[in-house]
Length: 114
Image 1 (cartoon, rainbow, N blue to C red):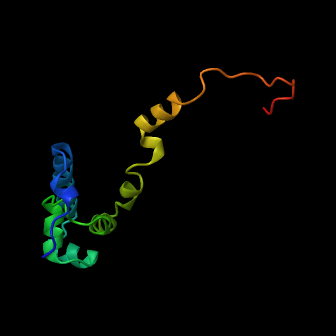
Image 2 (image 1 turned 90 degrees about the vertical axis):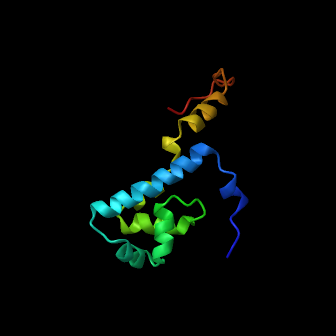
């Protein structure tokens, strides 16, 4: 049996809770579709135990398993937009803070491209 990665065992509590919530939400989405775990696992091309670990919030479950679950549930778009630049206010604020404070007109009097 492979060892758990150090990253999985050193997760901050907020991340552990978020992963657990993600697993529960996947289970809820599956149940709302009235899809048994065995059928979902077959459609994901994973074992029943792997799906159960995903739904239990096991942080060692691979990203491909998560992507397969979202695909089967018709939610791939959520994965695509997870960390999209337009939904990153901290990144936008950091980018804005690096903009020059003053803007100057060209010195040679060249036409501006507006």
